[in-house]
Image 1 (cartoon, rainbow, N blue to C red):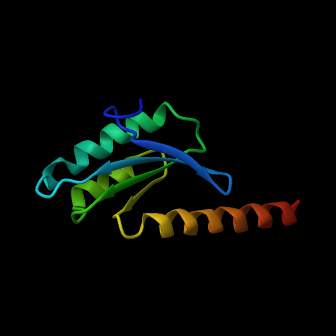
Image 2: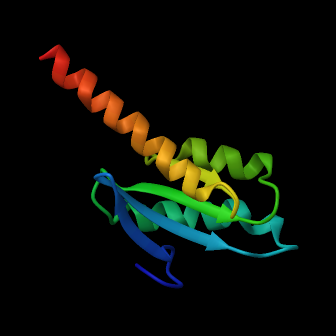
Image 3: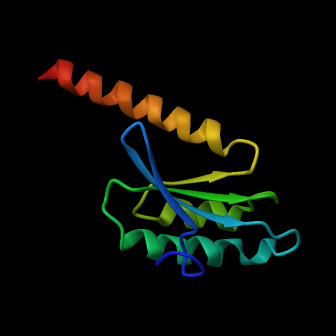
Length: 105
């Protein structure tokens, strides 16, 4: 499901696979939670390790945040200014976590 079906872009950065959904609406905040649920369903069709990034230019509302928390997948809420830094931060976290896991063995 890529394009209008819930995922706009997929990629990999430092072995972290991600799917991105972008909604550049200025006055449709009431649709965010519905968009998150649609994105979540699209993520369910992806391998488990795929992390979701939902990007918009408007503020995230409580209903949207609750929809993300109900998801079984990792979904990060971002805007156009912090998407790159969010992916890099996640990548650094996952790399540190995997190194710690390797040291535990």
